[in-house]
View 1: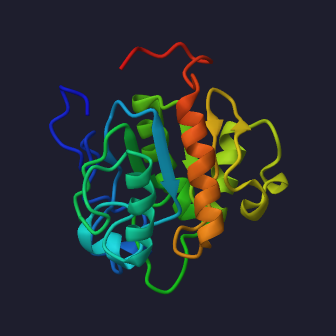
View 2: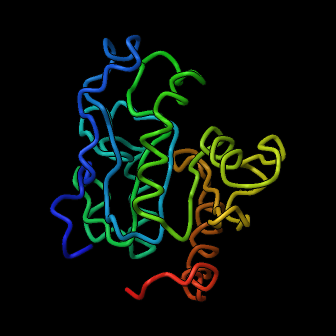
Length: 210
């Protein structure tokens, strides 16, 4: 983790009492901003907080989906704590969402995702990762639309899971929903990502040495 970083939780001090989406203010427990290493090469983006993340305030924690996801990070050497830890010790990884508040009965609307977009854009700009990992179909569509030259409709998570897509300024490595991934697809993602980590993935941007 960056030596000057004081906290992994919402390290950029984003508005923890955001009221921009009135319909979500009544249903959420908290605003769930990004978490992790601000010097990370790898930035993972999900759709919106689950019930577990809404309780813990940390993306991809607090429930079975979170444990499955954190187990993957652990096997990649990006999480030094147990998968069940609500405050994972992420190194070289940052986790966040398209939308920051949970509605228990529906996914975020396009308008709510658009309202939260400045938060995500700021995190990506300040972290300047090498690899963006959209987690799930919705995150893939939104990230592909913003950071590739192709139409977002060209990408389906079942087809591009565990592949590398060249984007504008970043490479994208899509990941299927960790809770519903088969063991075979989980191993495929791990194999692909470990192979990516073994090569010089920084070569396209000339990043600082770590």
